[in-house]
Length: 449
Ligand SMILES: [Mg+2]
Image (cartoon, rainbow, N blue to C red; front, side, top):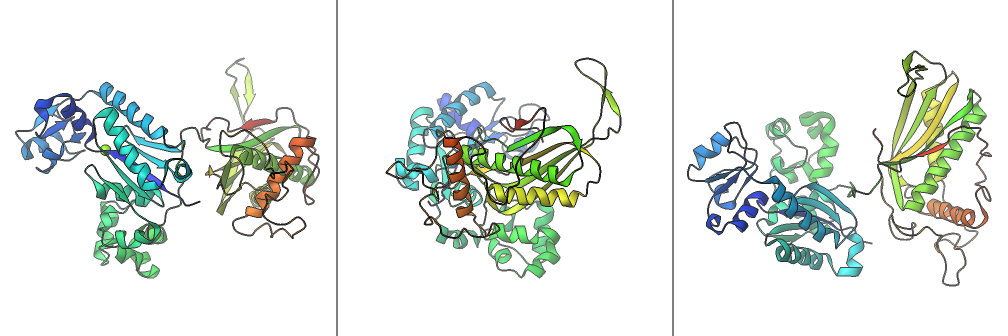
């Protein structure tokens, strides 16, 4: 499935709402949010922008530039109402929406194409619906990723619609000034210009060494962005931040075998839950609570003194996303080894974060889909997701992509669904005997970390 990200942004939002509601304001420079002496401009109509007024500009400066402008205090309640209508339109085209502001959002429309037509059609329909329901213009940029979609949207304004195909990304970006590159503030811009990098193309084609001399450790990241590479997922509101499982041992544990068994069980459980929810993740976090208290604090409920157990956390971000239990286990054990803990522990937890929807090419149900195993037309459980023939050697667990490993995991899920938990285990897995008092699931809600 091709990945298509849509960035939608209302044009001069607050000012446009005011012009819509008061015909006398149409065609006039309307400036919202700079009525108090210290106020800053929160929106400027296109007529006001012609005078050089823009949002975030101090009010006094806006008045200097545009003394005949119509300065309004603004009505946030009204803008919120309009915003809800706009976001409702977005929600009719996809579930995967990341709101950025009242008038702005990223939409992952990759899965919407089958339902609503090609990306450009979706963009056009969103514009029409927003116009029909609010009387306002929304600009839309569509591209293979967030970074390029946002740039495309900006370039398309006002009332624009711009689709950038993967082949068009580099030629579109190359001539743009580097200050438009996400993550480039005034200081970085200065450093880049001083080193002779003026455009995205300059940065994209630079030698890493030269770029490194100009901006230090950020060189690689900036080069990737200048080339239009951006793998950040669209984070929907209902998406959990992490999926985790942790357990407090009944008795404090030092024994390596029991530690390993606990981490294995947690890793498998986390992977299973991620697959069922239709997520893959990139960051594995190991949580360790040491058994020896370093102090105490009064309990909130009883007022009695409660011991403070040191809580440590170690994490590793992988190159590829995964929902594979064997890999999570491997990483959790590695993090444990690196933590070098020599004293008893009270609690261990494993979680997976940096989540994104699993690719839908057979990698399990999407969020909200009923849990269930992949089935062949005959209704039989498909052990390898229909991919590899049964008996074919599975790729090594560290192979990138890990699609087949995940297929194995899904097959294990299917068998467990049918025959109960523990019916089947990976050969490498130690029996997961954990004595625990309050094993619990973490991450049903976004966590605080
Ligand atoms: Mg806007």
